Length: 433
Image (cartoon, rainbow, N blue to C red; front, top):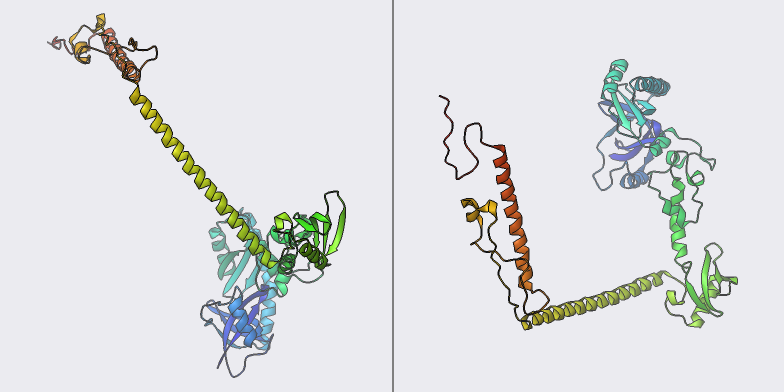
């Protein structure tokens, strides 16, 4: 018959194993288990139903996966236990030596702990560093020094505090090292919900992070504050409209302030009666005290208000589209109503430097539309004359560019091979004879 057991090793490291026997071993009994390419020694930490529960809920457990298949081999003898005590003394020596070698190699890392496997077939080194470290050369050096397999593991500062343990400000051992199964994240919002001081020196633990115990009572604060109105709300009570200043969840009292600046402390039960007699509406207008059901009502009201705003936005967009269509239609009718204004086409005489055949070919049908067309119908230029003026300016720029290139080729003279850049020239290339 197999039993699931949890075994604890040095450094608060735990793992689950299968024990074959009629009855599981006793708690805290030394036991030899299968390890990575060898054997290791630990102590029984949990058995039976507790082990099953921890295996499905802890981070080092199996969760929804099948149970672990590693086996617990046998109970440790007195000689084997004495051998493990000697290894604990050698752990500190290995840590110091590894730390000196890492410093000599120029690696920015802190080796915080070392752990020999019980059969001395592997040495595990735990270190902390701000960035990723390339320690391959260090591993080869340490493997040649200790004559065994070397494993380097980078851990965080909270895991470091869990392995090394210590005494917290409460006078007890660190929760992570004594009983806390998992290191759950703690953010600043947990401290804000409990109205704690945000001074880091008061809410941080020995590891420099927020204390794990801040999460223990957080759910109580969240559930308790649901019975109270939100601070800053305006409530309609027996004395008129009053603003909620402070909610005391331990004394079940609410501090209110009227528009004149006078404050009063009212029990929560009395406040609910006053608000009910006053017949207030929603919380924002000063109605009943907030409760778990009020949160859903507030969400529903906010949703309805948001739908109304969206509907108004749609109506505004529809109106804007109709206005734009009306303006486009009006503009089109105006353009159709205005008759086309006559224009006078002015034929430009070719300039003196454009008398060659190439310039004559590049002219557009020998006529161009002048940008200064005379408008005989009105003083305002027509749309057609404006377009023609833009086209004329573009043509002039192209002609000026071509004329400038021909002038530049003429100033440089004939080429070395006797040819000219003038396409109309028929001068043959000079002979070398």
